Image 1 (cartoon, rainbow, N blue to C red):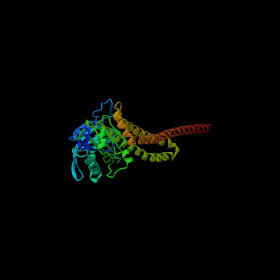
Image 2 (image 1 turned 90 degrees about the vertical axis):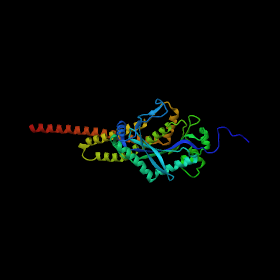
Image 3 (image 1 turned 135 degrees about the horizontal axis):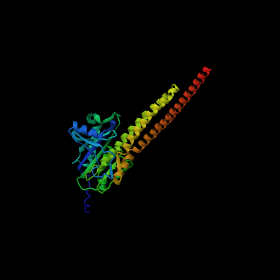
Length: 380
């Protein structure tokens, strides 16, 4: 009989310490005054607000551009697989107008398959009518307290969702390689109950990252798995920021999609009518377009700088892969192209306004010359 290799037990592992995190992101305003929001929350709510930072990574290696404001809400009860389950709730406010709500459910004591099933069931519960009411209730509670800190509050209706399964300890010592070999990540990451093809499985597990031999991160479009024995949350925080950037870029993209047809109509209207008022109409419209470009450019830069990466190569790889996976760059490029169209239109309108003013001045000079001639002939 061949002895078993020490430290390499067979069978699916169990979860000794871990949880499931569900994120929903909203855009609620043009900007949020975080200092004022912190004061308002301290005044009206029993919970305490703090400025978020990466837990383990040194600030010089990777840090928030403007640290978001983290606030704790009262726990909620979520029905998962027919069982009332307690969930902690945290909100994060970003200065460029985004809010992230995070629900956390403990998963210690579950077997691996139960852990995957619990994650899928939690997603189903949060996507149900009751789940939607729960998300909206938490958001309305936060928004009601910090209303005075919102600059140009608005409800775009855009949201992003992300689900993260986190394990801090299995019921046995495990390396990343052993986790991949003994725990089937596919049902957890795909949410599918049917068996996937080999190509689909390989594609789902393609974005894997490890820094030490006993940690692991696997990313997909709407889910992630994190094995982090040291208990820090830096990877989850980085994934949250990447989702926030996607949400905001989508918002600007849709905003410009709505503005471009309206801009064309305004340009046509400005070009119609009496020429003597053309310069004034052109100038007014040019100022409106310039304001739009300035607002979107300013906030887009804030979003781009939401997380500043310098020295932490591992987190930078995870962050860069998440941005690529979420196609943030493609949406950002679309926003830039549309901004270029608005800028070109602004330049053309400015030139037309200048030309119209020049024509008006020339006409005025001709009228004055004509009047002088008439006066001179009348005297003689």
